[in-house]
Image 1 (tube, rainbow, N blue to C red):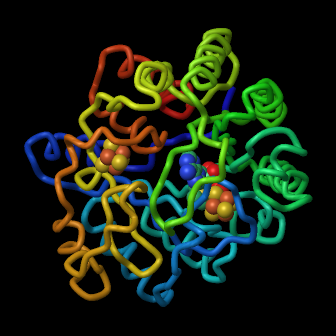
Image 2 (tube, helix red, strand yellow; image 1 turned 90 degrees about the vertical axis):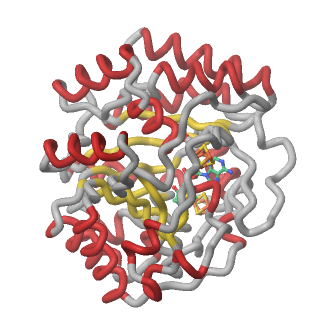
Length: 343
Ligand SMILES: C[S@@+](CC[C@H](N)C(=O)[O-])C[C@H]1O[C@@H](n2cnc3c(N)ncnc32)[C@H](O)[C@@H]1O
Ligand code: SF4
Ligand code: SF4
């Protein structure tokens, strides 16, 4: 059994927002806030940390959260860079609680223990773990990162905070997926997977040999689908895994995308962008602190025909919103059992 209830309060409002999105009105149901591009480690596949990182004042961030709440936001994700490096994180988590958001955070886990008093107020912590201790520390470029993350995760679990592991599949970590599922089983956590995807933000090249080739990816996905069917805690929908199997690395993902209409991101400086693949496309008419958050969100382009990425976050939502019968039934059954919708 995986802990964590992924739905925030006011389900009828959410249904209303989805209905209005279907007739063309955009509602930012889920917002991912990149608090900073700074980080305390250096993953070989992460280009974000090479981008310049500005920031908003904490009053601006809280004002932004209030504006999005008025627009209908229900899910708020703290992301980065490394969000636990940001001093005001606890203040933002408290604001998210006051506004009734489902609050989650994506982290490398190294500073969970230091900030546990603030982080225990999150609904879900997604912690990136990319292999066993040796491989994880090698990928993130810092000894001791794995041990620190495990300590932090155990502490979160002792406070009953739901956790999920997120492994970025690279060319070398296929053989460690079983260890990761075992770790998930010990922690009572789901384990999510997504491939290393070539991104442009920050301009750096992804280290050689990290982007999985077609064969490595196909083997990994086939294995994961088998383990999922056997009841192990693979926190990816079978539809997501099958879509990767069919399209990686060169074909369009095959789904209409709701980026910019039902979900979006905000950069550390306060630019609204449609999704994690478009963080570099900042535009003056989408700078929230200058033009206001409603106008900034309203200025996002329609990306429904994009199909250009395999990122788990947006594509699982696109699958859910596509309302395929199998996906809808699975989501309903997960919901009834208090699990993440795509478990
Ligand atoms: C950019 S990080 C920010 C949050 C936090 N620092 C962390 O690592 O969890 C968010 C997630 O994106 C993943 N990621 C970074 N670069 C990626 C890439 N090129 N392809 C796929 N996933 C990537 C990270 O491993 C992490 O799971
Ligand atoms: S921990 Fe996160 S932000 Fe830091 S380098 Fe790795 S992926 Fe990038
Ligand atoms: S398919 Fe991916 S890259 Fe394209 S708009 Fe959607 S989330 Fe962004």
